[in-house]
Image (cartoon, helix red, strand yellow):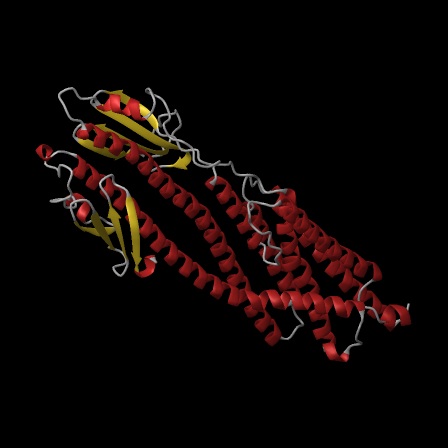
Amino acid sequence: MEKNTVTVEIKQEVSITLLWIVCGVIVVSLVFFLTPSAMDLWPSLNAAGIAGVVYLIAMLTYALRKPLEIRARVWIGIAAIVVLALGAFTWVREQGQTEWHAETLMRIRGVIGRGVMLNDMREPTIKILDEFYQQRGVKKESLADIFRKQNSGVSVGANIHKPEWEGDHWQVIVAKLEPSAIELLSQETFVKGRDPQFKNHNGQVGMIQEKMILTEKGTTYVSEN
Amino acid sequence: MSQRTDSPEFAPGFIWQIMLLTVAVLCFAVYSRSHEDSKGNMGVASPTSIFPWMIGGKQTIENGLRAFSGKPPEPPPIDDRARALGPLLISMVLCPTVFFLEWRRRRLAKASFFQRTPLRMSGGLYGLCGMVTVLVAVAVGPIAYIGENARANMRHAQAIQSNRDALINELNLLALDAAQYYILPKQLGSGGRSFVGYSVPEKNAKTEEASYTVTGTRNVVVFRAVSTRYPSCAVQVKVDSLGHMREWIYEGEFR
């Protein structure tokens, strides 16, 4: 009779363990899958992580209840708090770090873009200016004439950038072409600039855009956004 | 009810359920990894880790790389979601529960690990779960410490790189300025096909990023930029009459 009683107690322990696991798996999985996370895993992970911590605290409270001796309860409790705190700290920092990485990638892309734009607009304008001031004689060609000659008859709105590789999407657009003034502008199609409300040349909003103005007095470079 | 039910701590069904669950999760993780590897995924390796933040981080970096190449971000694939959930369940639910509840039972029964019969199914599971739980708990501290150091180093390196990029952009503008000084006639206050008399415009001589000086001859100028934020770092470049930049020299941590 006494043996029977002991057996029932062990089975109870097993059932309780199973119950804890099943409940934990269901709660954490539900929270994970029900949290809306469109493009990122973090919202689901964070919500499920919080659910997991709540579960762990509840389970540890249950596992460390009396009649377990106070010393074991205190040590395990402190260790659990330290581990949970360090885990949460690492988790949050890791999320911040990966988001920083992604933002840094876009910042680097912006810097590369501005450099390429400046280079792409500098080359043709300096060449035009150079040829303009090298002219001899009374009848001189205008800046626009030289520009058309160097860029085989392009007109306003044309893209004078020649792609150098498959992913080369930059454009240098002729925005103004007058005898004594030429405006070239270049913009990004997916890298955001300083002002999110800035209206870009192609109708987009908030993208990086740079402009080069060439007159007979020289060039002016304007970082528009 | 007696001899047979007296010894095992776990009901046979329980053991098999736990084993099946563990094997299923492991199989799914292995499958997902091989599937992901065969697809190739923006060059980011798929981490299989007991720490779920690694999978979250991988997803964020992948979307960052997509944005870098002008592609729209993609929602996390279902296998990535499952691979993120798997470690979470193993490290926060399954292993600690089996370990702590069994530890409590043993503690109350006053029986140590070595006093028990070896090679018992429940003992194996307890040992495995205990190992995972302790491993995760012990590893979190060093991971936090190493992670913080790595983050600090990375941010410092990136700050230097950003400063260097800013200097290069400003030097690009100075090269343009110098080239047009060379080209424009003396009547406009410029060099008339010479760099003689050229100096860095006052507003550009000292910026938030660097201080700029120029030296040169009739046909070539040399710009030197000394970083304001990192005074031991500098960049030097030669500029010709058409504004072409060459012979870049980087000093200090810019190297």
